Length: 289
Image 1 (cartoon, one colour):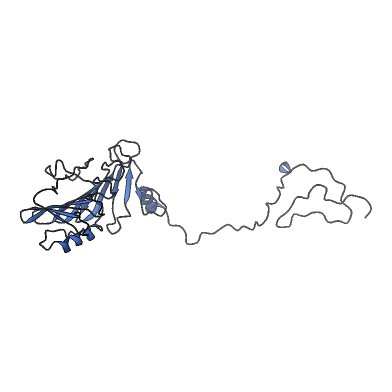
Image 2 (spheres, one colour):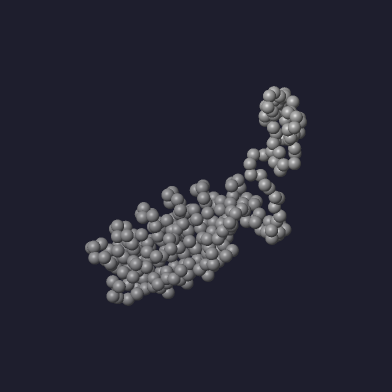
């Protein structure tokens, strides 16, 4: 994730307009938090906060510099200074009078934390943590409850691991891995459906599997199953009509007795490909020709 959000120098207006335009393209950052205004310990590798804690950015401070990018008389960007460098900034991206994004800078002027409100409800629902200007962690609230339920970890700016609380009970029940770094959409997901806090045996699913089978089954079948012949022979079938009548006497439906067959007529044979049982009463009855 590139971060061109470094401290700038006057004139501010071109920079303000550029930030507002580029901020619309920044990835949504869900609420990953630190305690008490950002003064708590830095995020641990396995930390999974459940509540968003907004880090203070005093927009009413005497060190705050408001900027009106669209000339509507209301500040769209407020930059809070710490001496000659920017400490933090708030942006109103949809011009509704409420901040939608907060950006916090380190001593080198690089963004270290981004808080975003993507559903425009006035609450932060995404927090991105950056180190040396590169994304390292993303925490998100994906439900309307406002609680954090999705936690992403990055290595070198690349997504490598995700954990989710899909039912909102405060416990992780999905574990995502990303074996193909070029295709993060092709994740392998393990789930916990029995509530013991661990991935269930055989629950892994490859999201890019054509069959949608569990990844463990796919791996086993592909490794051990013999290859199918190039063209397996198929049994010849020529049934185009109703199936032939059953010839076993015990299975044949009873028929009414008929008159003797007229002399000179040909008896029914079984040489035809599809023999049929003669319907009752079809034989000629004796009498005048």
